[in-house]
Image 1 (tube, rainbow, N blue to C red):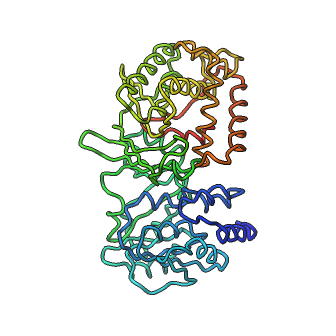
Image 2 (image 1 turned 180 degrees about the vertical axis):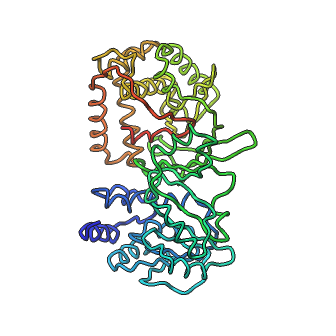
Image 3 (image 1 turned 120 degrees about the vertical axis):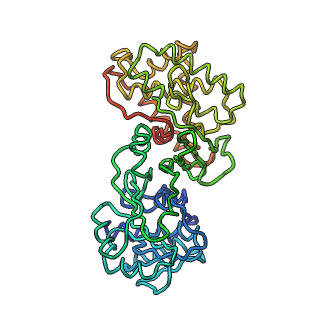
Length: 447
């Protein structure tokens, strides 16, 4: 990061009205990757995934611009944040100015700590030995790193790695934090929630390390990227007596915004492909699966399911002859069965076009594909325009957290949809990672 970036970040933090760990004001303020990472909603996701000790005295070494510090100060009794760089230290102070739990230091403070958090560049043997001697009898150390080589330094300092967690895409802003066991126990789901290589690690050490990550938990993943704070969620993958379950909750329980909200949901894990995956492999089943999905939407509506808006094909598993809804977190108070069906066909056409679906008319547009899919279940092709209008309104709220002052956001999203609907579908096949049970891309991020 350049000195100019650092000064700008410090200025942003000094002027921000909301410096919380889920601040929309900060999340959308960064101009480039260097600025966005420390301001991201997900900057503290690795720590959010852990069960941090209550009333803890915490040491953080290398506070940077305070992304972790802010979260620690919100959930811990006392936080000593160590940052030697004066510009960054000022940024941390601005970010935590409304918290009485945080003090920022330019050097280590001799205390006893229940939790220590160290970023990789600071994980030297001397520092780790110093921390080891000052951990409480139930204390724990978390080292965030991109290299397994740190494990050797920890061992030399007399600290055993009790738990290694994989962070995807990295530990700076993690989408998923998972134990290695999930790769063998639930490989389809593991690949889906990781979304690619794990370039970060969280190494848990010390006598209290086991309590940070319960034995029954396989992974925790987040939707915090292109959503406003009111719609950010976490999902825990846990073992149960019957296998495994995904339990999703909002990070900040909030009232609906313009009728849009997210809510908790829980799904049993099935080793089954999504409807989109099946259609890519077996396009001849399109009429059968579309009709079955439409009937599923009607059946769920008759049962009073609140999150009907999310019952789109990529949230449906094809488990033999049974269609199983998953990930039903989004609520739309103004949407009924017809609106959900139209939305599902629109989004399905977009996904199939992205994949170069072999059953698509070569040279046709995504709009043509959406219209044809709709006809298969009784929709007039003109449904596309009303479906896009609703999707734009939904995405604008989901990504901004308000119905006011969103004209420019709506205009930009509408233009994205216009471009996507006009693009040509070339009808080739491409390989897509399976979505498993519960880890589809963020609705807004797709747009």
